[in-house]
Amino acid sequence: MRGKWAAGIEPRNFCWVIKDRLAISERPGGYARNHRKVRRQEEIIWLREQGFSRIVSLLSSPHNLHAYDELGMPWAHFPLGPHADVQAVLPDLFAHLRDWLAEGQKLIVHQEELSDRLMGVVGGYLLWAKALPTPPQAITIVERIVGRQMGPPGRELVALSQNL
Image 1 (cartoon, rainbow, N blue to C red):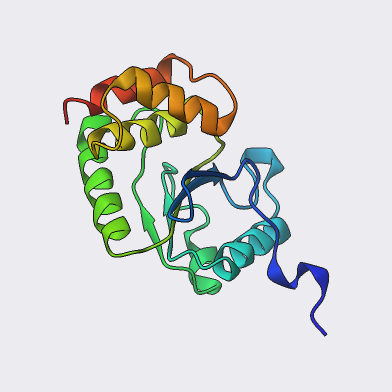
Image 2 (image 1 turned 90 degrees about the horizontal axis):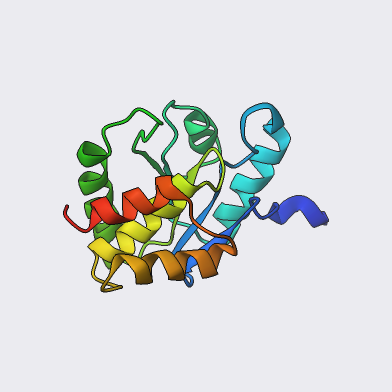
């Protein structure tokens, strides 16, 4: 008999950006000092059991990538740390997201935590992909999805995405 945890647990701060297609969350297992290996495994299992095709990591380091391999979850890594050149990373990330979604893949994108930066990335993607027409609309929609206001770092990413 399978236990209650056999299907894993939902990652913290999990939100659908595009229902059943594109989601965001904090890093599976938690961020920084809160990170737990068992929780990471349970969250990756949950993602696998929910039919996610790929985990997209925006961490500046390769943390967690080995765990995705161990549990048979395809992944992609686009390092977007605090000092990354976002103009170099975002066009490649956005093009891959567009292509994977067009293929029918179910994606989750994460950073350490569900931060303004991650909110800005997905808002920027929605603007870049022309799912939303203006930066204010992209910001408003992402704020509603996440349930909190987007700060200046996220708003800057949304504005920048308009010109990529």
